[in-house]
Figure (tube, one colour):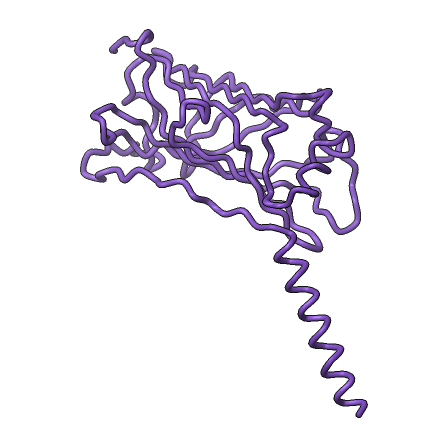
Length: 229
């Protein structure tokens, strides 16, 4: 009898955990990555990756409002892992004659956060976390780009919840190709971690402090900014 009670109890606990996990929500990548023909790539002899010297001097951009091909995902480890994305953001890359002086600008609508759990999303936009009424925008601006060991590195500042901290993150430029309507797209991807408590969010038991961010973007040259080397 005791054995049967234990079996039933374990079953109930397992069901509850599965139900909680299901209701907790999970977000995964759904972007369709552009395939670059490797034979068309000119690789840096130092890092074995592409640098920006092979791009025309111009301004490049992508935005979710324009339905471009880009994605910004995040995850936070904890008692129950949190995964999510931002549904509204834009990226601009200004390529300079000296490519190391090129700069990146990212603007994110903080209230567009999505974790596939309505209750949790409402909590995240509240003043307990992102406080989006007071701080509606998350911004990153770089002032230089350098070559790392295996990637490019953007050096800049991240502004989140009214606080600004230095953020240097690695990314890869895969090259360019034509999309299905004959326009050139320039393919970038990267990932990094940052400590959310440095931006005013409180440490909470069961919620990790480190946020892992991954991104993918197909940038397109702005028509009004064309200029060749």
